[in-house]
Length: 152
Image (tube, rainbow, N blue to C red; front, side, top):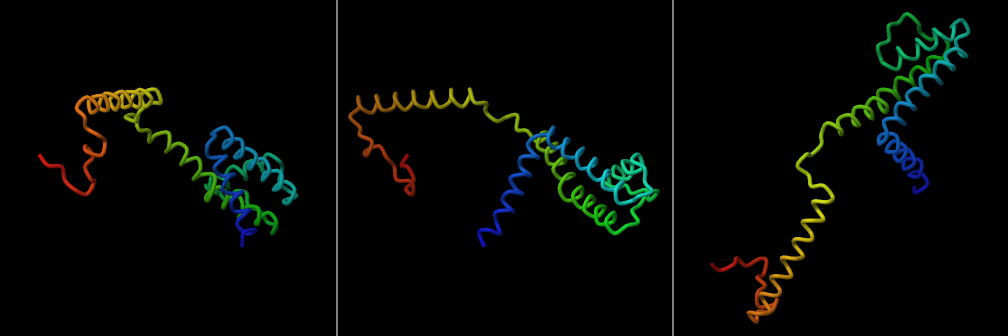
């Protein structure tokens, strides 16, 4: 069972690796188009490389004008794989990348602000401990159980 999950993990890590870099994602898209156009040119003997490149771009974009289509079973299998990869992997990764750039929490604290808040909390804790020591209050005396409401 564990051996079956290993390729899935590698595929998932590969998708994460692609999704986190627009350059890698665009490069993989270009390589996919180039590879499929070369294979189309190889499988479909009558197609020029220009026509094969046009076919790959049109098929990958899922426009599918129908002006050029594969005749061989190898070409059709490759077309099915190209469409599936584009629709199920590449387009969602591109969309997710751009969506994550649009959904940015501008109210989130920056690292420097978080460090300043931590430093201020340490200072306040020190002051409270100093005040408690002067008053003779121990930590156990001043602690309120979480389930019991504080008396006012």
